[in-house]
Length: 366
Image (cartoon, rainbow, N blue to C red; front, side):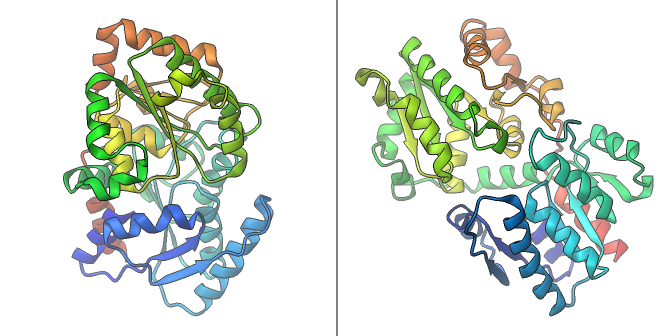
């Protein structure tokens, strides 16, 4: 959302950032990197994992904030629970809702969960729908969204990724987040190894999926001695436990080729993505960052709301079972033509001008 924030400011608007206090340790480094300071911080005293508890906390905080505010519209992005609750809270105050990254669908209401239903419900509440692709527009039209409310603009994540890559300055100090691998040693390792970056956090993968992914990573390291894996672990303790169950049983001689880290700041993570041989992830946004950076991505899910990544040739949906993941790693290892084709596909999510288009449409409409 940061490119949209600055695009609106350039056109004379007064955008106000409200930070809903989820994943504090992940959020604030982003604000620092993009030089944005939220005008409102809504800390959440979360005591349970239940989604109902989270939703109630967010609604209560936003309801109070909206009651005391005077805003022209509420802009939400994507499909998080906080985005859906923010849209609903704004609707209660008859404040028009702007949905950035609208129209993404897997057509499976429980995969991803609860994101698929969140974005459907946001579409019922929004006045402006900024779709990243023509397929996203078709999805919205099929649900009865008026044609004049939908605008195909690309995705702001492309804007953010391109801007960040241009301004990326990774030096020894921030790169020390990787602990055992200072920048110089990391760069030497990448010269002689294929870097695989792994992320996994989806709720639908909590039961067995995360552990299966970790099992495939373990098998890959044992099979290929030129592979080096960096895996930033989501702060959820259930996820960490599932990963360590598999990685902890690795042979000692292989453990030096996998680095499990705490969540990384955006500059360091972007540096890793840019250097990667491939990316393995169940994240939605990273699928788009991968194709923007020209790195093949294996989607660790059964479905994706970003089929354009697959149809463009930039990635494959491989699920979480070791067999499917390892088959794709073998294919990319043994077939240079397939690998190079995935690296050089055209980005279906725009040219980095989405934020400019959104800002111009909103300013004209408001």
